[in-house]
Length: 541
Image (cartoon, rainbow, N blue to C red; front, top):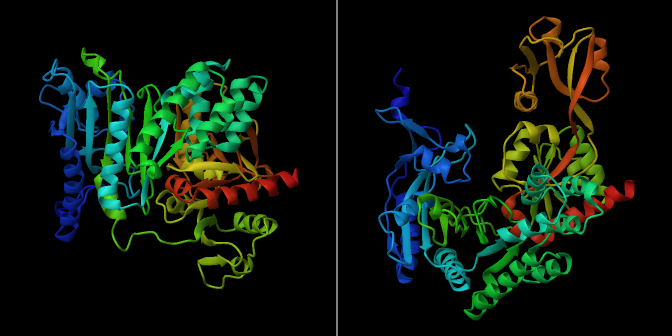
């Protein structure tokens, strides 16, 4: 009964001795750079009012905030973000001070999914430059970002820059609803190349659709700015590109150009950010370790309009990836592939790509097999593990069914619909049963409860979902549920058990996914693999 007294809560951990020293050393390096540039420390409470984050339009999902209540019943949150509380202080206690250069070294708290390996306590170092707008302020912030990562990572990092106004300007020229624009934004941000192209097909007669279709591909060196300039027509979009060019010129004159890349598909949280946005990547990390940008509208929420920009570094992520045993010097990519039919189909495709897959076809007891004529190792695993390996960066790419992607939750780029492993999610019931025929609440069984819950929630229906691991067809037969949500290929099993298909939820097929950091750190190799896949797919059409 006392077992919880000797363990730490999910997402937290103890740091002892060398680990503590390594973290403090990393923090000290960042703080040294901040102080060198004239920034002063600020410390805000670990607990803030929940409404402050909601009313200011903070982009963090509500379910990621750790909530508590005070003695009056008001909802509080453990500090989920450092920027918003600092903006509160700047707009109130520091109002009228002028330009404020502030830094912090404090923890944020966020709820993470169980058994996901993510931290709920996230140590961050960061800066906020408040009251300064324009090119010089943005250049100062990016210079500070480069110097900060360079203080611990040498030259094994880079900063990627985008502009929130670029997507906004191009999207304004598209004759589409706000809902459609948001869907396009999500596809671009997640680099869902195939899904984006399919969705934009309905707008193929509009010039803006061509530009939007290319944004997610435009990442790399300064040359992507010139490529983008050829395809955008909106004056504000061209202004954004010219601004990024000027920024690059300033940083290059400071000798920092080699650390600056661009990603014009960086279009997350465009209602929060108002100008330049950027992320930092360090070799060995599974995702970006630094993120920031310009947020000129935030202080206005506290009654004190002022331009502002800043960034946060996840100190623990940087410290972890700089460990000797975590440094990534490998020159071979890794791809995780779902065992079973998808593995066979994947190998067929890779052989058509010209890859020697003999070791993959005959691995013996090996779980990792090499491609002899291509710098690629193949990891064979169960479907949910493919996503885990890719998200955590131990594999750069993965081949997994859309069903697993829809059911799970992960951060990665879904870059390609491979076209094989086709099936569909279906709602099925006993023959003669009218699932939608009354006001009675319904119950369904599924191996994919998250897919089922989301689907019926979007329809506004009160449907209970029971998870079944085995043959879900038994649930309605035994009168446990009114129906099932399951993957169907031919429908023969349903028919044999007296069930009929009512409605399709989603089409399913194999997808190629890519780790977000790997896409940037190993761009040429991964784009080559994607292009080979596309050539095989197109040859089969």
